[in-house]
Length: 137
Image (cartoon, rainbow, N blue to C red; front, side, top):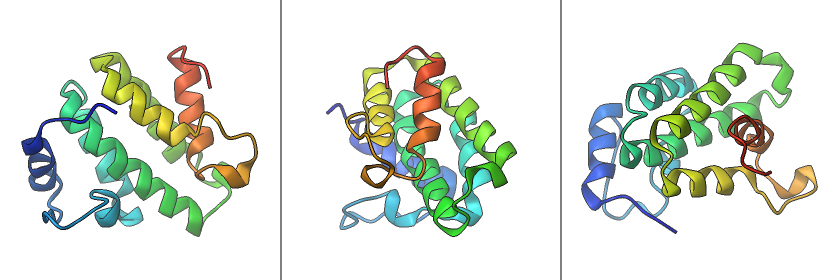
C-alpha cells in the first residue's frame, strides 16, 4: 500500500476543520460525518490535484457517504449526491493518476467481493467510478 507523507493528514484535518490526534487509528474514518458529505466532496474536488490530500479526503468523503447510505440505504433516493460523488472520484483520478489513489478506489470498491454483504454500501458507486476511468471492477 502506498501512503502519503506524514504531514498530509494534518493538512487535511486543518482544511476540513476536523480532529486529528496521533492515537486515532482509523483517521479520517473516525471523524467522518454524513451531515458533512457535501462539504467533504467539495474539499475533495478543490484539492484533487494533490494526491496526498486526495488520499485522505477520499476516505473522509466515502466514509461519510457510507454512513449516509446506512441511514438512507436506497441509493436511488440520493441521485444527485451519489452522481456528484462518482464524478468527484473520477475527477480525482484524472487529476492525479496516482497509484495511491487507484489503491484507495480499489479498497472501497471491494474488487474481490461478489455479494452485496461482502462490500461497503458505497462500493457500487466506487465501482461505477472505476468503470468510467477504465479500471476493472
